[in-house]
Length: 472
Ligand code: ADP
Ligand code: ASP
Ligand code: MG
Image (cartoon, rainbow, N blue to C red):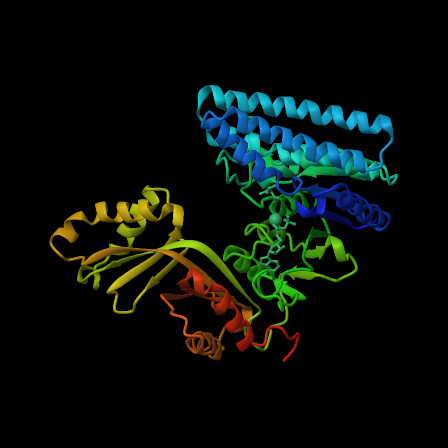
């Protein structure tokens, strides 16, 4: 039997009629060799438009959200016109899109009337991008004589109710996917499935978080026991650094699931951080490929890969962060202090992205997103109000406009030169390191620096490890 490959196409890859035709050609060619299931994102920019429309409706700006609907309508109409379909097919497609837009408009009207945008309503509204794009991709595929069917993941991916950041129930999703997707595939029909969304057991639409279509692809891969998951995007694979920051960044041939997870967690936007989880559970290789350079081999992500002798494979950066430092003598040897710090933040529903504690235990530093900074500061001040009054805690300090840089590679384990080289390269560039942490996995070293230092810092570290070269 032919191997089963799940192929996911991101927003840029389905961003125009031209791109969609390329996608159809890629899938058509692959379908001659493999059994294929396709997962697609919204056309590029559409999810952002939907977020803005939802927020405009909530703030009673009817003109703004209506403009957004118009923009979305013309983007899809323009693409449909340029897809080169027959008149009947074009008309059928336009009427499908119009039905969806009426539905979207009703939901926005509801938010407008209530003046309230609940997480549930936000997910429902933002899910429309993928619910529209699947129809264009399915039609383009039919045009290449490939049987295809647009499928909403609401019928096959079951999630919990954490709207905006929903997590799949893999067992239930497998049951539904086997029932809905398997028969299509066995009949030679390529299902074109919405990325990004699923539905709760009650059938309410949920989303997996921004950039979540990558995650959808491996969830579908898990559910169908796929042989491989291919993630098609606008770069030739996972690179040694963000190519927008380092033009000389190089595509990495092979990464482990753990390395890829670490890179995406610390800001490599090319993959949603949870993408590796379902694939790792079943050892399904993930391949990252470029829609505009389909012959390039891309990056292969598997359980075990050869260690790079440099100890480092890539550097990532994440901006828009705040650092909170709690400092004072009460911490010295007092059990339960850290628990109170984390308890206070957990109660305020703030997630901590980075922790660093000096060995003297004189201070503890935490990084949170900028949007959570003031609330985190407030929560800690309230928790330690007494200690601050009696000066057992000297200060709770908030620093903003910071970034985390992460240096990642399995080979770092037992490779003391990595830390040395990283720090000395930053020193040579006169870049001030505000805090340091090393993951216990010894797969990354992360540093907090000023946001404005990011390009220079990434370039210096990239240079010191000679990452632009494929071998050393
Ligand atoms: P898609 O729409 O296909 O999901 P994304 O925009 O989400 O694509 O992710 C691809 C982008 O990720 C690239 O265009 C690139 O700018 C960015 N990126 C950031 N860091 C990296 C990295 N280390 N390797 C590759 N791409 C990266
Ligand atoms: N369309 C969604 C987003 O823009 C999901 C994705 O593209 O992966 O976040
Ligand atoms: Mg993406």
